[in-house]
Length: 567
Image (cartoon, rainbow, N blue to C red; front, side, top):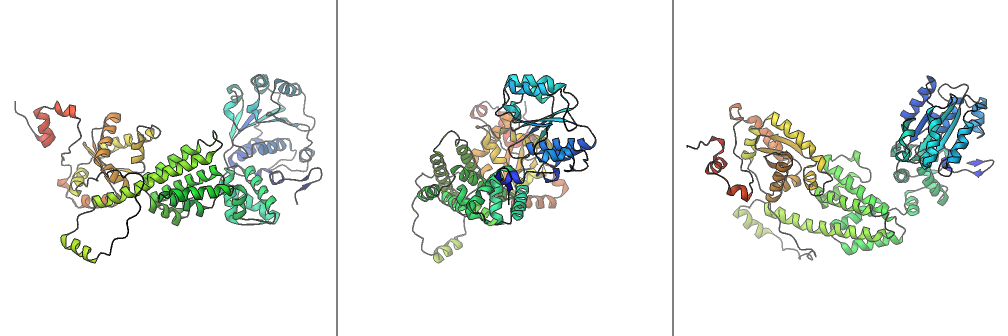
């Protein structure tokens, strides 16, 4: 078991701290660079290891200090020479660690500086490892500057920090910087399972998945969470225990809550949420989980591939997509993100989460009714005989549902553009015009965070610029996006946005994948002599502009450039 002669029981993250470079998790490029520096004897006098907590900064610093003093170093330290043995016993006189979080004054740094000129007692280098270096005071940083710039050949500084922005630029410029990245969930999971197997403890893979997700890229955090689980149940790690200990909710419960939200079951939502809370649920974690569910559903809606899903299965993602639209999911994501940002300033975060879910439920309940009305509005009229047959064969209507509390707004009908009209635009399309418009189309991402123009980014995200001529653009997206683009008000707003922001005087028409395939087929079947024929397109004009139009302008609006006005 994990016991130390002096200290007794040792926690997991200390027991399984990397003892060799090959045991470092998730930082292979940094490890390879440092190993090459040792082999080629190209060791710098100062290093800065920056990155999130628990990613191996201090561990790698110690391994590097041991390796450069090892007398028989090849691919790894030998662990048999006097320097390695002194390091393993924790008594190497030339490897000095300083915690800048508690020793951050100028006197602490002066004490180091006074010792710098003296030669190493045992090894080749004297190594100073200063952890959380960003906590040093400004005078302490300034005192360290001169020594960092021109240290003796036998001295190496390794500065470690989780907040490199607070390190003064003059210190940063004197160090070789290595950015430690967050460790992937897969690597954390793999290492955690290896440790459990070494300890002889059984586990559920889903429980390890949950621990890896909660660790958020920190191996040390993952082992600390695992330690807590083992304190509760030393013999086994189960998903049920993990959820109980850390106040988590299961995916099944979260999908059920999401279903209630999109069915506008407000009383059920609040009852379910408060019941979870009384059982020790972590409210912020639930909000983050719901946000991840929304993200998974959006990812699945794009390609239908479950390999990219983190929290949901393909069936669960499809279940959510059957309840709502991608547009409403994007709104849900914004609401949840805004609510999560309030967690740090408010102790009673449950109130904000409840309000957020009520808002989501109200919007999605109304949206479902509107969607149904929209389907009925755009549906093609049935033939008289079919209508008569339907009426005769139809079953009695079910009882009317309880009306939604929010009033249903009038649904704007979708403009159904004729296939021949869209084909004429495609036949007149120009590759050079499409390239120019694509450059501007790619700039829409700039409006992602502008509140008054963000709706255009959200409307067109994931769509494809299909064709472009001198007067029109056809974009291809899903059915919802195409219908939204083809409503009169949205279409006019989009036209004015492109005109005002980019100077594009073109109408925009939306199509879905089915219409795109149909147009491509028709285009291929069209003879060459029918292509590149100009097509007249009526554009939006303001009332002021229309009032100032000349007779010639009005004729051109009707007949295009072919009209000739006699003097």
